Length: 464
Ligand SMILES: [Zn+2]
Image 1 (cartoon, rainbow, N blue to C red):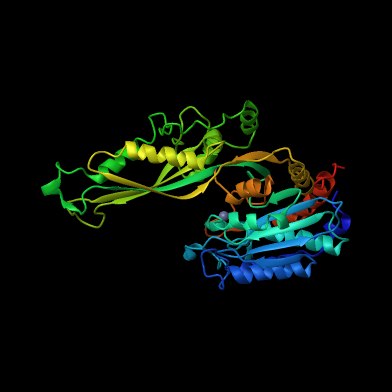
Image 2 (image 1 turned 60 degrees about the vertical axis):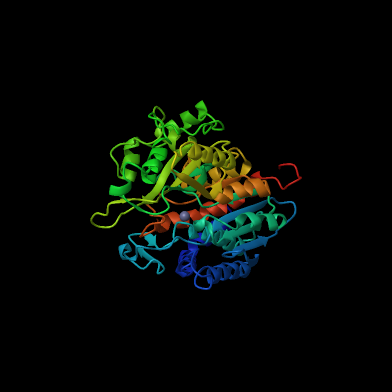
């Protein structure tokens, strides 16, 4: 049970808590903007706030935006929880679709609107609030470490060397990653598997310059046709990816998971509305929507260009055609193996008269996390206590690259969870969270701390 002094503090200081969140939301901490403009001052503010609460905190540089790292050590006999969230945000464009300025938080109809209000400054402020409530109400029930990243929205390019360099400092008994969300309204969730990513650009070059289609058409091979044929060959008629060996390391979905997902509040109609389409025709025939999205890999062409694309006509046989192609990976699929298989596929589908080139960016491994760890039980218990709701175990079709890094480098399986709602408009104009939901979230996080202290064992010591 959450200590009375802690829940009282959170209830009696709602206005002050919200006003501290407003301050955090006013920093335009866009990861790809110059550091001095948004991320730097935001990181300093968070670290200062933590220090004011008795946490040993500092802003540590990376090769990009800085990270905030902090520690509050209470006692060796207590478990240590590591908390991850990110304070950087997506750019707010298009600005004219916002009803209030993105970096000037505003409450309308019980919802707090601002860029980052959900993704992911909520994940940061919950910890600041919980620490504040415990520090004013008798002290933390466990040891706490925090790491707040400043580059998640650009793919966490510097987290791998950062975690490796600070592995000792970040060592913990449990990890909570508050960058997830509810599966639906009234349906909190823990995400235990995320898909990985491979991203490629492919260029097909034919003649060394654009040619006259009257002089060369029918004689010289057109690289747009060759590229389109290659892309067309990437899937067979049943929607399966046709790259040889692509499915070799995909784990089949277990019956237990299939049953669990069948009980989620989910329908294909909802999914169609969400995407604004009338049919869910992508992916492998004969498999359910959640299975295709969560447990099967996928491949998409993200963009394609070449030749003449301006107004009117220009009779050209182009020199070059290009495409961007991304893949979402699952199970034990290794991005390096998939990379090699894709390059071979492209080479095998490069006809005479064409030279092909493949470059890769952004490889991330898929990750499967321990569903039954004590910290997951603590999160479920805290949702029961603060929201009166049962937690669903879900997967995610997208990737949070740091999740895999924490597992591989620190040996910590995170509990990926959070407050985000389906209509929180993350990455979009009018991002928001309901104020009551957010403040209840503060009690949830405080309850997580309490339950972690009761259920997780400090390393090397037997569980209580
Ligand atoms: Zn995001």
